[in-house]
Amino acid sequence: MKIIDPFCGMAIDDATAIFEALYNGTTFYFCSERCKEEFEKDPEAVLIMKAEREKLTEKERSESLEKMMDQVAHEMRNPLTSIGGFTRRMYERLPEVDPNRKYLKMVIEDVARLESMTRQLVEMKAMGVPRIEPSSVNDIIGEAIKLYEAELRDMNIEVRTELMDNPPTISIDRHKLTTAIGNLIKNAIEAMEKTPGVLRIFSRLSNENIEIVVSDTGIGIPEDKIKYIFDPFFTSKIYGPGLGLTFARRIVQEQKGTISVESELGKGTTFTVSLPLKYSEQ
Ligand SMILES: Nc1ncnc2c1ncn2[C@@H]1O[C@H](COP(=O)(O)OP(=O)(O)OP(=O)(O)O)[C@@H](O)[C@H]1O
Ligand SMILES: [Mg+2]
Image (cartoon, rainbow, N blue to C red; front, side, top):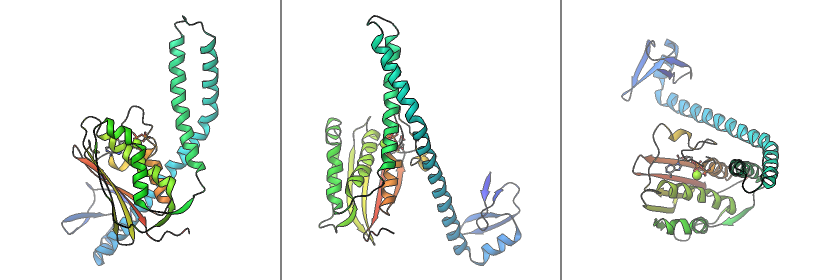
């Protein structure tokens, strides 16, 4: 198995690694004696450095994936318009009884789905100009729940909100943030499709941040999948397309916030959106 030298960040094979050190019950492997010595001088500092490096790698990975997503959307738009347009024309010209009509109808529907996906991607990119206004997170939560009121009622999902009293106003793009929280609610509903459960949403203060927590009692996320859920097009659903969380994260990051997730398979999932109280456009 390949593991990472915590000091220099190089990938090494744990089966052949000869330099190792035990710290706090964990064995760390090194590519050289020097790396091991540096680690032993101040393990805590090295581990902080390692965490920072991993964060940066993750950031680069998600940025390049999102760049790819934008390019794909751009490249797909024109061909899709012509496939959809010509298919519709052929469909309309075929007599009602023609057996090929049903195939063309399938093509038209699939193209429409792809078109809606590329539209979402392009809109996402176009939503560049933020409309920042003083807002209350409680109002945003209320608006986001309203977006899915019908589904929540129809599916017998119990909604429990615990909203903080007199939340401080924060300057954010209220409309976008409502979309982001809405995407989390939509996922929670879909995760409780088979067994209707409880959707808990609360707002709270935590240090210099306001947190919005969206928690469900749904199917949960397998441990090996959780690191991919924010990636564009990652989905476990038939008609994904797997953009809800990509958008939610982008929006939250635009507001200088963070989004994190905890999940237990079969028990449920909790997303925490954390927004700085002092939002500043740097
Ligand atoms: N609350 C949740 N419970 C269980 N799984 C979840 C939850 N939220 C996200 N996931 C997993 O993460 C995947 C990605 O979510 P995301 O919202 O990005 O895409 P999607 O819901 O599949 O499609 P879209 O949101 O574009 O309609 C989901 O397909 C699902 O597997
Ligand atoms: Mg979704």
